[in-house]
Length: 439
Image (cartoon, rainbow, N blue to C red; front, side, top):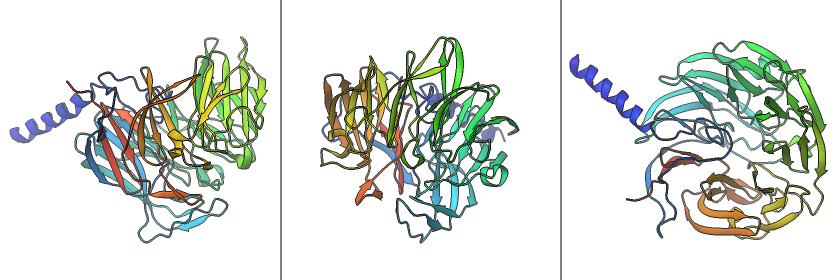
């Protein structure tokens, strides 16, 4: 018994020791701002790339990993013999199991799995879309057909759950439910759907509904986004028709600005810099400005040769410039925030410099004076972005893209940066790449 207790204690100590460095407990990082703040990270890549510490099997999914307290949480879809066809305008019907999996980040060993039967009827049916959100002893996971789970982080035990279709009359959008849940304070914010319930706030401990708000023709795919302005928080909800500012505690509508992306494809989160809020999606780009009263007004809308129109990756705003991927051309584009004028554009970081590729994708994560970029071909890139241009400092291929779109292979899953590692996945494996600087 004493040996068993000692072994258990050592295991707890070991897991606790890895949590002394920074975690990545939700989509886009601890502050949901695409910033990686850990020190002691590589400044350049060796010629043969960085070492992969471990790799373990994983099935289909667009969902990125979350890392907290020595554990990694990720969702996948297990569908033996399923025939995946990515028809942009048609739904695929699959019979499989949606899963939430928890791994030990030290060696990739599987700690637990929560799985459930989940038929799919969505386009691009290759698995869940949302990164889990970890908050203390709980992890929140949202599946592609609207199953929301609150699980215990230690053993995966179900604490409470919701079914957006059954509970709210929501209709699964053609490309699935993709709005990453947001924990802030005592509440869990979700984009749900259904009449009067595009946005819903739940008590994070009990799952009890606190409020619901907004109606729209489609809920869209954009995650709830929390900002602060003039000393007050606002919850931004961008659905298929407009961008809306809500009072986080009550769901009261503070303002609304029309912004209709093509096909309801509000996906990337609104980004705030000072008083300005940039929204960008396929077919829609605009700059909003918040006044001292917290209300928003339109400054400009993008045109054929201004702004950029993002697909799945979040833009980055800095020093009066916005950087983002354009869904039409596939290029990484820099624009002047004040008027949307394009400063430069390049295909090198997105599709490797190949000719125009629709929805070319690279995920941008700022680290100190440079960026880690993870692109759709599975390359990790170290680069500097400035108003003058794109400067690549190094790249290497981490993994092979296993999904596909428009006739080319892609990986569209945002990685996690934590514990001096990058954690990334495709539809076959989960990878841990060592980012620690040498002695």
